[in-house]
Length: 390
Image 1: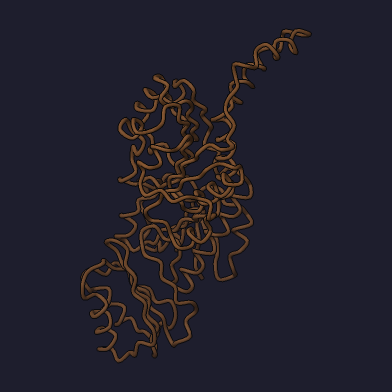
Image 2: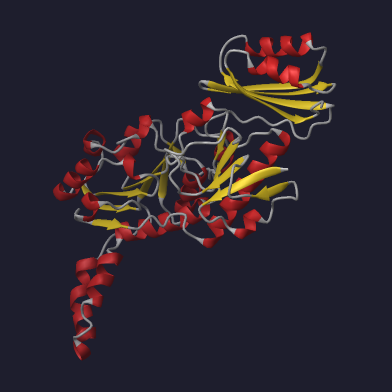
């Protein structure tokens, strides 16, 4: 019986997917389900094996510390993609036509009585803006959200340029053939009338939009950020807005500096805030946790590599979280051989500093084998998924 602890409220549609082999607890747990709660300073129980984030961003989870403890961290890419796509489309319209400003202005006319229709007709010209049709949209990042945005913009008769040096095969297959491939950020900056950001926040993308990149953009460019606030340097965008280099900035990440900027539409982080998105994320997170705890399979981890061997059809399965160092597979194989276990199937995958090895063997696994593997330098966690010999 595996135990699961929820942090934040998780959609019931996800929780009800747990089979009778799992039970929810408020105490020590094998797995954690989390949304936005800050786990950066949390002390993790030795029993904890996995954390599933019902969402995409994992800046609230100490990924490296988890990796060092053999705790696999999952997220749910794509589960909220449609929700974000829809609000980005709204953002495109608000970047073009001053819809937000016009609504505020109309609301201020409440005491004008019969004069309101006349005032509306005389004042509406202050809120005009260009149509999207025929304009060029630059999409930076072609993951789950970026692909949907790019395809939808094609449907709006926009010219679409996409740039992503790490585009996956699945994303490439889903991308409209009418989306033109840009070869660099600079190509996007040079040609785009609108730019929308859909990249993760990592060291390489921090302040991606800065004084230098803004200088390469068209005068009057309209910028959308529904990915992460830290992708845009606040001081640089504020200056560009003041100077008219950027005509409009639409962001889902308000702060005090952003709220003081001119020509800015600040939205209260509504990107994935739909009931459908929360349900999709909860279902995906629960399924990932169950598959990992029951079968040892990893899918959509952010600190360990993906690894999937399906159901175990051999006598036993063992899972090993370890550092990505030379000779580890040979060492693991040698330990199993010394204990007279035949390897029926093995998969070893690596991701930067960390690796994961999943092994199906003929014969049962005793505590002596687990102890021998645990004491190998570089191995941080050994789990017997099936076939522990008592």
